[in-house]
Image (cartoon, rainbow, N blue to C red; front, side, top):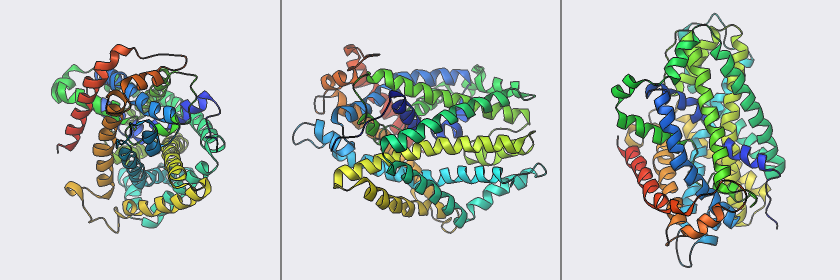
Length: 452
C-alpha cells in the first residue's frame, strides 16, 4: 500500500510547526524571558535554537524521510545489520504515550476556560479570590476534568482517523492560520493598553542588572533549555512527519521555517501577557497561575474582557490541540505499521488507551491528590519529569549519535539526505560540531534536568 504524503509543502510546515507550538510557548517562554534579562535571554535563545535545535530537528526529519516509516521501523530500515538502534524507537513511543497522559488533561483545562468565557462564567464584578477559585474548583471536580479531557482525546483521534491529508493537514491548516491571526490581534490589543509600555520594557529591553542578579551561567542554561524543549525533539514526534515529506526541499531550510513559526508564537505570547499584566498592575507568575489565575483576573478587569478572554483561550486550545493531533498521528502510524492493523482499528484502540492512561493525571488533583511519586512530585509533574528530563534529551542524543557516528546510520548518509532538494544546505565541515559540540550541550541539559 502506497504511503500517504502531504498534499502541499505548506501543509507540512504548518503541521510540523503545530507539533512544536504548544502550551510551553505561551505558558513558559514569556516568563523565563522576563526573569532572565529580557532581550539578552531572547538573543541567547535564538543562538541556541540555531546551533542546537535546527540540527537535531533535521536529524529526526532525515530518519523519517530516508526510511519512509515511523520510529521503530525507521531505525530498522537505516541501521546496520544486527545493531539495536531500533530499541530507541520503542522508547520514543513510550514518550508519546506518556506525554499524552498529561497533555490531554492540560489541553482540557484550556478548552474548559474557553467554554467558561464563552458562557459568561467570568464577570467584571468578580474579585481576585473568586477568579482564582474557578481554577481550584476545576481541579477539585474530577467529572468536569474528565469530560474536557475526553473531548480532546475523542476530537484528536477523529481528526487523525480521517488520514494525513483529509484530517491532520486540512484541520491544521485552518487551525494554525486562525492561531496566527489570533495571536497577532491579541498582541496588538495588549500593546495598546494604557500602561502597557512597562510590560514591554520588562519583557524585551536587555536588563544587564537582572542577568548579574540571576547569574550569567543560569541565564545561558535557561536559554539552552528553552531552545531545546520548544521543539519537542527526542520522541519521534517530528520523525513521523519527515516520513511523509517529499524530497523537493532540503531539510535545513524546512527546519528553519518550523523554528521561525515556533519562535514567532513564543515571542508574541509575551507581547500578549506582559503588557496586559502590567497595564492592570498584576505581577506575572510562572506555571498554571499565569494562565488560569493571573490572566483571567486581567480579562475580567478589561473593557470587553469576555471577548478577549474567549479569544485567548481558543488560541490556547488550538496551540495545545495542534500538538495533540501531531503526537496522536505518530501513535496511530506506529500501530498500523508495527502490528499491521487498519487506521480505523488503531484509532479505536488508542482512543480507549489514551483516555484510560490520562485518568491518573486527572485524579491526581482531587481523589488521588495525596499520591506523590518521583521526588515528592504529584502525578502530572512525575509524568512531565520522565518525558522532559529523560526521554526528550536522551532521545535527542540517540538520534544525533545515530546520524553522525559510524556505529549508526553515519554522517555521510545523514548529510546526503539532509541536503537533498532545493534550499539551504549544511556544509560537510559541520561534522565535528555535530559530533562533539551539540552532544556536549545535550549532556549539559540532561545533567541540569536531573539535579534538584
